[in-house]
Length: 117
Image 1 (spheres, rainbow, N blue to C red):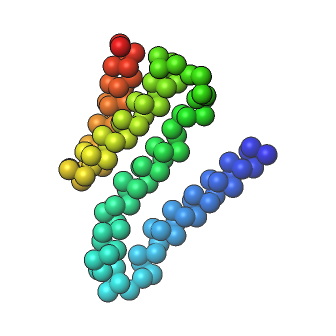
Image 2: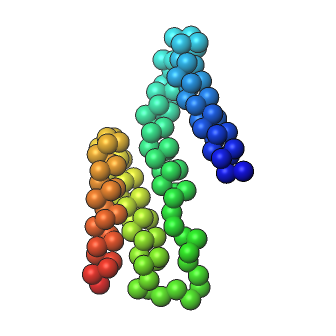
């Protein structure tokens, strides 16, 4: 079951990628120059990155009786803090690569800070 799901998911992603790459060649140039499409194009990479981060948050291992010094809670707090910092940096710089680098550094820095205290 898992291997068939992986194959179907891979083909679905390949199909979506192919369609999104081929679509601009099929759409009239006048429609491609609309302002709303330019705004969508600017915000799409950040939206995809935020969705990927949100789906990877590790909140499944948390329960009601978890302590403030637990590694699971520290990881979730570091992930949320890094996500907020990524959003802030992207809002200021509009550079996706810079935001990703800040996010990677932030999650490691937050984990180090939380483990130290």
